[in-house]
Structures are given as structure tokens and as C-alpha cells.
Length: 464
Image (cartoon, rainbow, N blue to C red; front, side, top):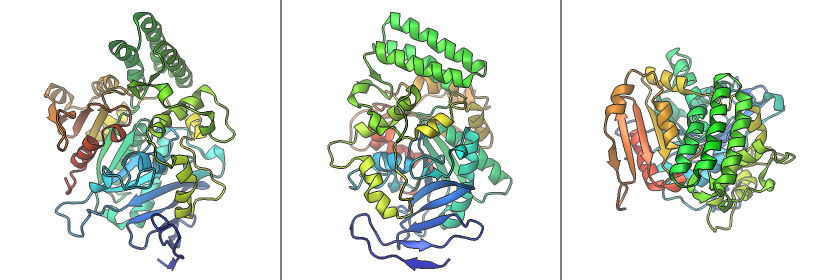
């Protein structure tokens, strides 16, 4: 591949010397750039005509040329739908730098190489040249992400020998389930040369029905609803269940938003991502909506996804919006100048309206049947994707090992020098479930120590 060197940038921490790589044959609209030492690579892949996915790869400093066992790669899939993994997952959760561009002590780069992707098209730095090209189903997303992986196997030689783990959060779990099944099929058909090491579903929206039915009993049990409000909420949840059963998915999403509004009013504004907090602790501003959009109920709900993380940034001088539209965009150089990065794309959120409430339990079953390692992990304090709801959908699996899995006791987990149990885990064959104590919806942000230990175990990292 021909290479050309770029001038040294002026910002010493981030704006490193770039090497622009000419497109490969057969992918004329794709471009890859990176640092001279190969520790970072990033680029665009045109997964469909006029539909461009942005990805960013970090090579772990712990990776050696002769590891004792295969060094893993984690592909992080953000939720929303419409939230930016390159921004939120990277700088607010597990990437090498935090939002103030300082090293993160708990970065998952200690255990694996990392790939962040703004997925699906239209999210973050990814873009479409026509809004009609936005995906409307999880499986369309899977097809695009599989096309991305086909390109990355060529762009990142380490992927040819590195087991790939799809690690997801929130709605990203639906992406991971469908993408995992798509990748597994392609591998089995000999169409994709990659090793699928496993799929990890963190607080993932796999079964909207089961999560919706869990809200009332959970909030009653922690005193955020009373019996009167609980009765009204239960009726709304039952209506949503009936609409899902009837295939009325768009209507069920509208009813789900109505239920969240009721809970917000009757619970003293409980934060649906952590029942120990109030949503007012992380104010949602109309300014964070996509430019030109109006604050409809669905768009406000989409933005609430990122409010918890953005509100937990601390007292540093930077905001995620500032760095993504400033120093990071300048470093990357290939992001279109007229593209404005936003935390959550409401256009992408709304495009998935007919798929939003569809379950993906069957895809998890398919992965288990192939022998793919599947991990479910859940924060104790989460409401929107509660642990009770996750346990409920797991019990619906048709996997032949389920009965044995459910019969096993849990094992206590600890972390570092801290006192007390930090999590529990249960494993049987290729299904694993982690109960993360003291964490809400965003486990790596809330409990970084145990999250780092967990990802080391999930990936069987040589560094663990």
C-alpha cells in the first residue's frame, strides 16, 4: 500500500503525525489513517453506496509479538440507538483517555486491543449522503457492520489471529446479537476469515417486553413508586406486552415512552439508568438535540441515554461535545468539515421505530447453538434494562444447557484491594452471567475496577 507522510501537528498529546493510506482495490470510497507506530488506526468504510461507517482502532501496549495465548480484540457497540461509541464508549467509559484527554487507569486497553465504531451509519462521525440510507432494522445494521469487519480484516492484520469479542451496551446488545449471528454465519460459510471469540451483552435491550414488565415491581421494591402509581404503571406495561404480541411495534414504543413519562412523574423523577439518582441530577437540555430537530418525546428519550454519562464527567474543563467537534476532529483529519458530532442521533433513533421493541432472544439462542461464548452482565441499580428483566429473558432461552445453568450457585467476585463482594458470576458451558453490584446502566463508568477484571475474564486475556 502506498503511503504518504503528513506534517507534524501542533498539539503534542493528540495531534500526532498521520500517515494517509491510499484506498484498497475494491473499496475506492474507504480511507484509513493512523499514527506512524501503528498504535492507532482509524478510517471510513463505505458499507453501502453513500453510507459510511467510522471506526477507530487502538493497539494495546500490553500486546506482545509472541503472546502466551492469542491476544484478544474488543469491538465496542454503543446503544441509544443513535449514541456514539467513538465518543461516549471511548472517552467516557473504556478507552485509553478520558474526556479531559488524560490517561484512564481502568481502560480496557490493558486487557485487549479496542475498536470503537460509530454504528449504525448516521451516528457520531459516521454518515449517510441521503437520510433514506439510514438503517431501519437491527439486521440491516448487522449487514453493514459485517461489511465493516470484512474491510477491517484487510486493514488490521492483527484481526486475522486475534479472537474478536463483540461487547455491547444498552440497545447495542441488539446490534451485538444480530451482528454476532451474521458474523457466525459468514464464518461458517467460509465468507469471513475471523475468529468470533464471544459476545458480551451489557445491560442490553434484548427483550423490551421483559424489561418493561420489570419496572413496576423493581421501583415498588426500592420505594420509588407507591401502590397507587404501581397499579397504573402495571396496566400500561400490560398494554405494551399486548401490543408487542400483536406485532404493533411502533405503537408499543409510543406506549413505552408514555410509561416512562408516568414513572418520571410518580417516582420523583427517578433516573431510569440508576434508581439511586434523580433524572434532574443529569439535566437534559434541548441544546443537545440534533441540530434542526424538535424535542419530541422520542428524541428527548434518546438524549436521556447520554445524559447520565455526560453528567458524570466530573469537574474537568472539557465536555464531550467540545473535544469531539474540536481537538479530536482535528486529530482525525478525515471527518467531513460540515459534519457536527452529537452524542445521540435522533434521526437514527427514529429510523428504528419499527424495530425498537422487537426482541433478539432468538439470535442469542443461535449464538449459543453455534458454541459461541455469550456473556450477559448487568448493573444492580439499572432500571431501563434491569437485572430482573435480563434474568427473565435468559430463562426464555431454548438452549439445551439452560436448566443446568440455572441450577448452579453463583460465585462471588472481588476487585483489587477493596473490601467486600463486587459482583457475582454464574457460568455453564458457553453462557455466563455477571451481576455487578453498585452499578447502574453504564457498568464500566460506575464500577470500573470490576468491569476491567470482568473483561479480562471474558476475553481470556493473557494480561489477566
